[in-house]
Every structure is written in structure tokens, then in C-alpha cells.
Length: 554
Image 1: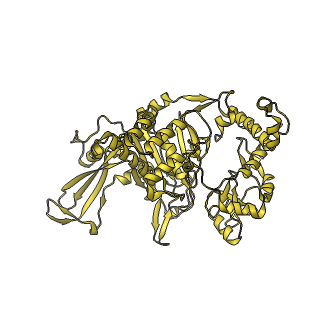
Image 2: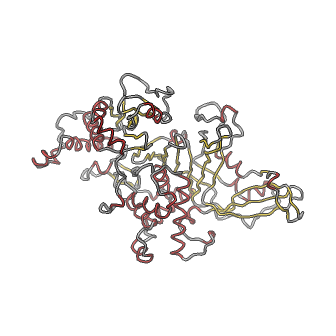
Image 3: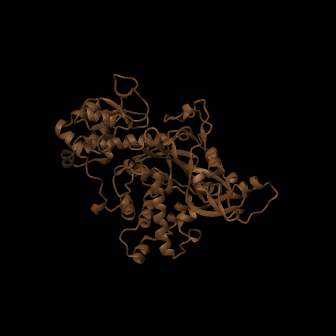
């Protein structure tokens, strides 16, 4: 990343945090330090001694994200944190109990302050075994007496924190999958980070960019453009697969995306699915110009369509005479409605259903069956039948004619509430498989089911395409529509990792299955196993800067 370019600097400090520090100084930081506790994996969390289970002062809830006010120590959940600010003027800044990170209630975003980070790191160092004593680590990093006078004691604490992280790293693993690296939040950009993590580990895209199929130098010479999203994606791959473990700031990429999608250029939270479609559209547009390919998506050889391009078949059948008309539509993902048919009325409320509860839940297979099921069109949607030569009632059925290499399933979690006359999020749990067979949803399978096995061959049947998939990434959304948060789960070498912006942690598959999935990424089985064989590991060298090699991993 080019540090000298002012366009790519981090967002400006929060004005509300600056005002809070002017009014109260470091009183909130000092009192909070006594409540900080270092967890076994080395991360700091806020632990109030007067309560075993922290609860929201408004709803008494203990689930989801909880925040403690920096001024009055009042605890609020994500749904009521803004309400606390409205009741208590000047109480705009809070701390995430679980992550020990500052949060501005008015900006509705995580904010950064070096002074706060010093307090947290200092507490982590004190919790080290023998943290207040000399451990011999400083001996290999001696400074001059002048620099010791210029730097406060926190400088030595940061050196000790290197030992903390390296010890934690060696306890966990000495080997990391290549490309596993956190992404810094640049201001409500968790939607971008979550999608980037999935795209970075999609085998076709990864192989394309890491094999230098897009040459940035030649691209800039040929196009003459100063801002190129493809070049920044190429740089992003190089940075993420460099072996460095420090969280990376994708500021170059963000600026390029803003340049190409000016209508979405803001620090406001965006929809991850819309961002995914936007990125693929830009890749298609840029590569199509370079390849001088046909504008027909079916003939496009850009990497976006080679990886994600599929084809949907739509059959509209006249109910009176049975005449059918068929059309084909390209797609880069499949948007699925949640299957609510087997749920009781109490289950269709806005309360999330846990996977361990004894109730019928939505499944991906149920959603796909719903997607490919014939539906009768309404009386206001009568179509002109070519056989009857008049408007007739008809039915419509979708199926998949061509499967992509990488299958993206988008779960529709937004609906219009007829009661409140507004959009609301569907927090329904969805059961999804790690291995998925798409054969039942192909046009050939659906036609056979419709007409029987008397028909054995189809001109549109993909005999050379694999219909079996393995999951490699899940994007989950938690919280409300206005103030939610995206995280990504990656499956690398059959181990799951959670990418929560800058933080990367190893998780078990139970946590992944229990997540509120929003986008599911599958890849054809041969590519999945080939990708695992090609995966290399980066070992932590004792000669390297241990802090740089593992920061952001937990």
C-alpha cells in the first residue's frame, strides 16, 4: 500500500470521541482498565465484577453484542445503545464488551483511538505470566537511552505484547493456511470485507490472479487509466497471499470501487449481496474491453463469468392447452426465498430459531425445491398463448440449465412487513449442507420428473458438468437491517476460520452451522479437492517480527 498517497489514508478520527476526551479526559479509560480481562486466546474483553452475566439495562437481554457506556458504565444491547445516548446527553462513546473496541453510538460504527489501544495492550501485558518482570525478551530489542526517554513505558509493553502473541500463536498452531489474513474495517466496510474474503478464496479467481493472468503494468499502459479495480484486486491477492499476518487495509480497492460505483460511494453500511454483484459487474466490464469479447454473456471469457456464470431456464405453460414457451437468463448467483411452509405461525416471528430447538427448520434443499417448483401466475399476470391466440392463465417453472464452477446462493432475509408498513429482517435459521448435489434442480432432471423416463436425452443437458459441490465460504449477518454486522467463515483444508474484519480465529463447524447465513459459496468438488491439495502453509519463523506475523489472528 502506498503510504504517501493521501487518498488512501484511514478515515478521520470520530468527532464525538474527540469531544468526549475533551470533556472527560482519560477518566473512562482508566476506570475501564480495571474491568479488562485477557481471555485464554489472548484477546481482551470487558468483565464487570458486579454481575456474572452482563445484561442490557433496557430489555434485560444477554444475547448478541453488548456495549458499556464509557461515562456511566451502563450496559446496552445493539438495539438500545442509541436509546441510551438519547436519554443521557454526551454519552455517545461505548465499548464492545466482547471485543474491547470503541463504538460511537451516533456514527453507529467502530472508532479507533491510539490512547485506548495503549490501555488495552498494557492490560494484556500485565496479565502475562511474569509480565511485570524482565523476561529476557527486551534483551534482543535494546534501544538507545535517548529513545527510551522519548518513548513511554508502553513502548516496552508493546515489545512484551509481541511475546504474548507469539506464545499464543505457538500454542495454537505453527502452520497457517496461506492467504488467511484479516481486513481492517475502514468505516462501516464489514460488508466489503466479508465478500472480499469469500472472493479471495474462490479457487478459480485465486488461481487466475495468483498466476499473474492480469498484469497490472501492461494493463495501465494499455488502458491509460489511473484507477483500475482489476489491478487493485490483483494487488489485494498479492498482499493477502504474501505470508504477512498483520491485518491489511484494502483502501486502494475501496477507492477504486467507489470510482466505478459512485452511487454507492459512502461510509454508510451497504448490502453484501449488492456489493458482490457490483464487483463482478466491474470485472466483467473491464475484462470484456481488454478481451474484445462479444457482449453476449454466454460468450464472455472474463474471469467473473468463467467462475460464476450459470444459466436459468424459465418455462411458462398455458394451463388451458399445455403449450410452453421457454426462455433462458444468465445469472451469477441464485437468490432463494426461505421455505416457511413447514413452520408453525409462532416460528415465523422475527425471533431467530436456534438449530438445537425441536422444530422444523428451513433447509437449503427446501429453498431450492421452492425455487424450482411450478407456480401459478396471478390473474393480473395472464400471458398471451401462441397456441390459443389469447390471454390465458399460465404457470411458470424455473430450473438450472447450466451450473457454474462457483455456486453462490443468496438467502433473501428482507421482507416487507404488512403490519408495520416497513422492511424487516427475517432472522429464521437455515440448515445448509457442506456437500450439495444440484442434480435434482437441473432442467434435465425436472423435465424427466415432468414427462417420465421415456425421454432420455436432452440437447441442453450438461453431461460434462459436475453437479456435486463443496462449501468453502459462508457470509453471515447478525443484528438489524440498519445496524447489522457481516462476518465470513472460510473452510480451508477442512478447517473452519472466522474472519471478523481484522480478527481471524479458528472455529468448529457447529458455530458455522448455527450462523445466520446470508450468502453461501460452493465450488465444484474436483476444484475443491484440487484447491486443498494446492494449499500451502506459512510457518512462523522465530527470526521474523512476531508481532507483524500474527497480529489479527487469534
